[in-house]
Image 1 (cartoon, helix red, strand yellow):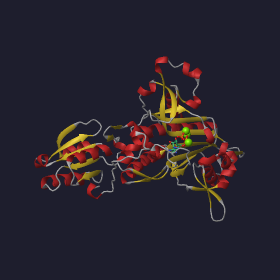
Image 2: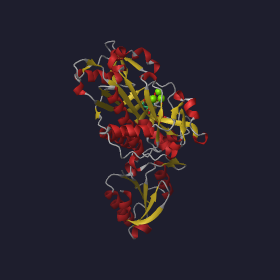
Image 3: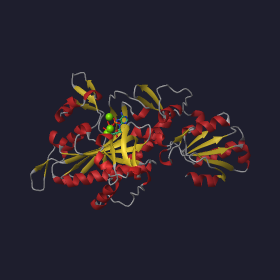
Image 4: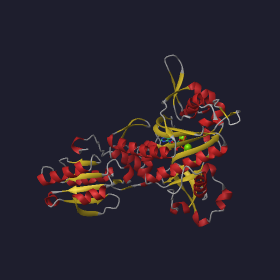
Length: 436
Ligand code: ATP
Ligand code: MG
Ligand code: MG
Ligand code: MG
């Protein structure tokens, strides 16, 4: 992307309601634009990051054996009447009436719909286990939308649903998602802590929230300080081996970690006092095992191995895809701006041309730009160097390739790593080698 032609509206004046770093930085860097309270348009830079986060989520779901579908945003109220949640859900649900006076709603989650779809096709125990997910916009009419994409009213969620024959299978599916979630967050450069959590309006009895520890988080959490150092090695486990999943689950849940709703003073007292931590965290994911709750209420049965009808055991698994952008920035920024982890950066590199119009400088910039194959922004604007440095720091590209007439005469590039500020004068080949 050439900045001279890009739609990248950086802001100098930040609206007063932007109270936390991630919200301010997303507005300043021109990633999002609020169109109504808690509803955002995604501008080119923000959309690129959103897609990268979404793709990591998708790859890890696929690796865990889940299958992607896409369900609509608008749902019929009748589905929710079947489960009994139409009245229970309350004011967070946006209710709509169509021209034929039918009650519709903008989906806040999809347990009812996915169960209804699945029951049409699943007839016997051989149709189990299955795990279906989608990545779709949700609407929740939050009382206090705030902190930008962290608590929007319209937001992007990955929600997945597992169907198993028995509790053992359901537990295995739950553990597989626990592993997939830890891998997902780790790939984004995040340290997420799985915490025992309340099941809330989804129901059920086994549930974990994935929390990014951050002072600006809205959840109060209690955890063992060992989590801060725990090496989250999760590479050696296989989804195909139930014993691996059990081992991983036991390891990761062995340390104390709970949200305030689930905080248990007796168990807390067992944690050595110097390791007890109370703090704030951002909920980026939440998994539930709720057994037959929806298969029963929505009438999903399959024929078991003995021919008798069985209600499948279900779980549901959510990730706040758009909220993750805020969480990543909260975890990774400085006074100058965002510091994107490589895996989710909108572009890997910013090429800063310090003297547009100088033949050698332009030529070297173009050469590097072409070699980076679209994974770079090229700052070819007729602006002062200081403006370019500030904008690149603000947008947080992991690498900056700074090119001016002096270096260009010898085909030299000054390469800066955004995270550490380290600089080195390198050849084009060396620059490509480091960036890619
Ligand atoms: P919260 O406690 O923050 O209101 P929740 O517990 O109501 O979230 P879930 O029903 O567990 O949310 O939904 C799954 C995930 O969707 C959450 O873990 C969170 O990451 C994300 N999410 C929920 N509400 C919002 C929102 N208003 N804006 C952005 N992401 C959200
Ligand atoms: Mg909520
Ligand atoms: Mg919650
Ligand atoms: Mg939750």
